[in-house]
Image (cartoon, rainbow, N blue to C red):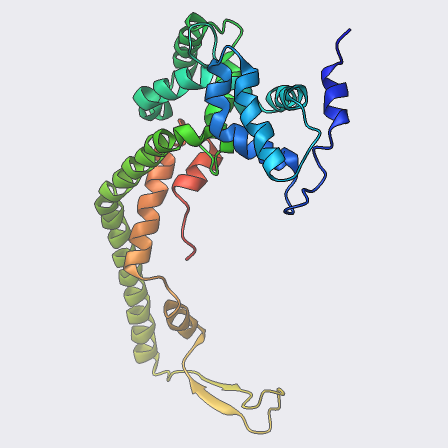
Length: 290
């Protein structure tokens, strides 16, 4: 009876540091497999492919690792890594990852805006089933799409980095252009609000001045402590009333440019609220602090 996968794995110390460096054989295998998994998945004789890694270990002074040890550890890596499982092709030569990324290149932008995501997921699921993966569910697809939208990507996706960057970065640039296009409308609304606020303040000041003039009242005099310790021995005379606090607060008001930018982002966030998750909205359109 041949040894089991776990027996092979336990026989070789994958997590022991190499004599020539602080790395472990397992880290070297992960790096090597990230570059060679496509060849491994497509080969007819995996021993020929894995022999190259065994020779690399020997070159580093690490002896005692067999082809069986390497193959068993790779099997464990595939079982424990969702990306690797999606990279395994069927007899058709296609993997779920290849089909998914090809679909995203054509449909990701419309997928984000769609209110019928379930319909699109069913269409994608049928496409993946036709490639030889009939058990793939819509939930698995949504989870995989969400994970691909977040960087950094798995080292096993090196061959897809440029395509993934074009998919997700391209969509972000387009959404940001939409935000910029919405700025004039938001800015116009903001200007009207600021103009209305200023007019109300001027009207209130005019009314107070008219009342004081009609009654012969002078502006009230307030006294405030002059020293930081709160001493009132030397009062500081201040002319004005409590409404002067408004002028102090005005000094801390945001600039028009800051207000315009924030209002535009708010509009866009509302626009995509039904098609993007909160995390995606926060990532694509973070609100500046004012």
